[in-house]
Amino acid sequence: MKKPKQIEDRHVFVECALQLAVAVHRHCAIPDSKSRRWVGEARTRDSQRACDLLVTLGLLTWRDGQGYLWTVEKQKLRRHLEVADAPSVHLLERVIVTFVDFASFHGYVSEGRAPFAVDKGAQPAMWALVRAGYATRVPLGFKWTDKIGPMLVEAGLWAHDGVAVAQDHTAGETLAERIWQTIPAWRRHWLAHRLGGASGSAFFYYVSKRWTGRRLSYFKTPPPRSARDWRILPADLPGAAEEVQERLLKMRRPRSG
Image (cartoon, rainbow, N blue to C red; front, side, top):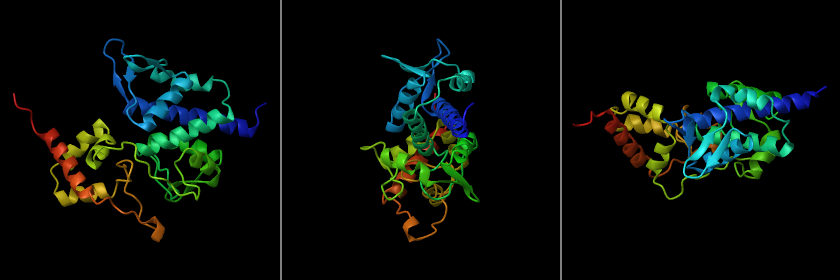
């Protein structure tokens, strides 16, 4: 008979790996019109880490010249994970860290210590992490506990004092390009129609309240609770926001010819 901890660990493994696979489907893949399977290439450090893990889990395979190919159909991902062998401690920690890294980069969760709202799709994984003691439910959403700290420190997501480390995933790119790359295609179209024609100051306000240093979050960052929580906005953020808005305006303009 399985012990409660084994059940909790299995639940965390399945839910975090499943949400990671679904997020990779959404953010890193393109449809292959010939086989109707999904093909993609990892373009950032967090997506590379995610894809490599999914290869380990038997969900992806690497093909030279083609990139990563799915070996399991999307509707069968959960079943594949549920019947997999019990994860080792190392593999479980790898799944948790990769989920936090990838999901925070794309705005589903936060890697910081402050309470955060969670995207609906990531909530099953977060509740599994709550039951296993890695997170806790708070009025503002969820909050990481000290139990997950050593994993995030070792992965470089937290400093040794427990403060989240903002990492530059795309060194050498302009801030506008970094912001643009974190916006999924569907959200670009939504922003183009909702805010593309807004005033420059209104669009900058939108970006400044959501840019975390790693991604354009779906949610406003909460107001600071103490002096150490204040964020210093990049000096080039106004210009970057202007460039992003110009790209959105181009999406609204009809193509000639």
